[in-house]
Length: 185
Image 1 (cartoon, rainbow, N blue to C red):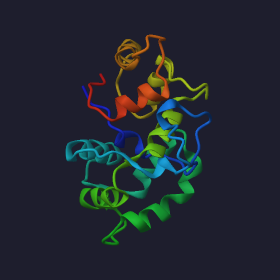
Image 2 (image 1 turned 90 degrees about the vertical axis):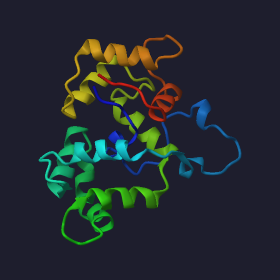
Image 3 (image 1 turned 90 degrees about the horizontal axis):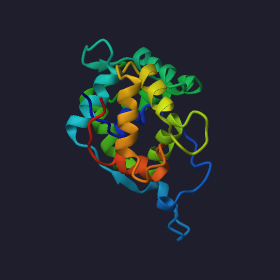
Image 4 (image 1 turned 180 degrees about the vertical axis):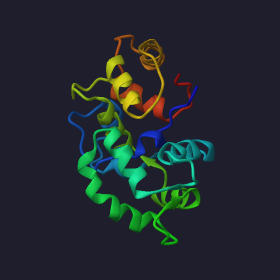
């Protein structure tokens, strides 16, 4: 069993700043860009799980190729061209890799997970762009990421997060899930 945390999805972020449609949770009405406010600060264990997902060969460092493989798995091939820029920022010792210390340091400089990050993670799951995450969408993304969850496990995950009982996960439910700890499969 593994636990979801926002960081597990952070690698799929694009630089788009707006949702297709607003949700109650992010409608503060004060005109400020609330997407830049920290929403969640993951703990070290969650950070390590995310790092380990990137570090597919388990050598203790993330290579540009490993980073690109994750981008491909989540359907973000268009971001592959930015990997060099990402490594220039994250590879603090200049060795061509991102080790766990560098991974944490870059994340800490960012001040935690922002609401825009959670919105973009939601969009990565919402492949049909209908504003809802179905069991099938959870199953497909987890499969591409190499997770070994059955469709039945994915149904259980959706039911565990679906607080309004409509059979899908909306943005508010997703945000609640991403900012607390729960078991995936």
